[in-house]
Length: 583
Image (cartoon, rainbow, N blue to C red; front, top):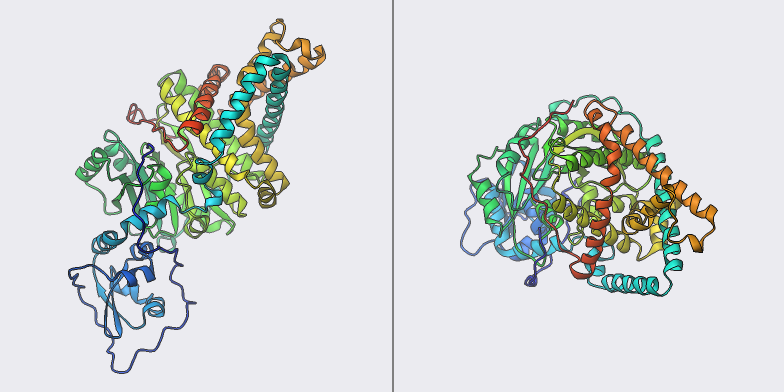
């Protein structure tokens, strides 16, 4: 998705975050004498739409989510349309606490949705952009000092290198080497902490399964829409407890047309996102969230092929996990790893990240930077977090950090979603640059108040956050200073040898070599399973893969200055049929 200019019209009335209907709401007023009990019939939708004041009292998001719409007052009674009067009857207490006596009438979800959007579409679109607390959102920092700070730092560093090259290079070498040491130790600790897959929890009976809403943003995906619908249709879950929302931007007429022509299962529907100040995946997710009602909210990407039993695995794990487990992250793999060398390296990279590093971080009690798909949240926690930061181009990693700050835990579960490896050089760099840019902006946002962050995460979590975010950024950006130690290993003089004792240069070169050996060992360990074993001979070639991330990091940091909210879209569909089943 890409950045877009233009301002949304001001909302005529604020849309408030409403609590779910609950039994502990205040007692409703007594029905006035002479007011008959309501009878159910088809709600006629007269000209002019619903009463905006009644709708705002309930909340536009709540009306769509719960399938109820206060329409008009008829004397002392408020007429309320409901998609299921029998279900709405259980919410009568909450409705009458807001409106007094109500008369329920049956209507369709489509009628409620169209009526609400006719008068409050702009509010819902604006809310999607500002759902996250501004203190924890990139929308302030991206338009504030950060771009200027980065530009000034780059200019100062370049000038210093010209004036005192040996001294400045020595400082940068020590900075990069220090983060390399910390990162290597953390990766090894994560490898030791990651535990084998636990036995599956007991199966839940059909009537014990929770409702699940899966959000699937799609953008410019004409060639993959049919594959996506087919893959998601294979999910084994009761249709009456599953809703799959295909989220499409209004201006993306190509993808909308492709989905409209498709024969969607009854558990699948289309949600069209109106234009706004920006156009990003997290904004689309925020907008669509108000149109769903599942107890669990899941995220898939357009090219995903999830395991057929994945939703049952998620439901069963949430049922047995503690209430502090608010998020489950599945494993990501590729169905086209044999395409070329870059695809093989990407597969090794993902195997290390999703099968070793992330499970280890979770077990160590550190913040888990989430992946962008195969994520599942408890709805109530997601609402309390303020959804996704619409301005963050790595909304997943940011959300993982915010979960940790509020005391919630993320667990990795042994269920696999296969997706398409981005295996062309420039598209890979573009995708990785977006991830690195998002990491940089996430670090800057959360470090605006370091003492508060330290209090939220604790010392151990705070240190882990610095290593994962700032340490990774430092190593990517300063990679050439680390590569210079290959000169020492091959007997050539190091560029800063004159400014440092020979023993220090040898120690730094030894650290660099040990980190390289550790990365190879970690890659081989992550690929030891039957699915990835064939990749082990390719692990040493990762030495030529990681330098690509350095190029991506320079592009990403440059974009923070020029286009902080630009979403560099990854194109899919090049290898959509080259699928390898999980073994």
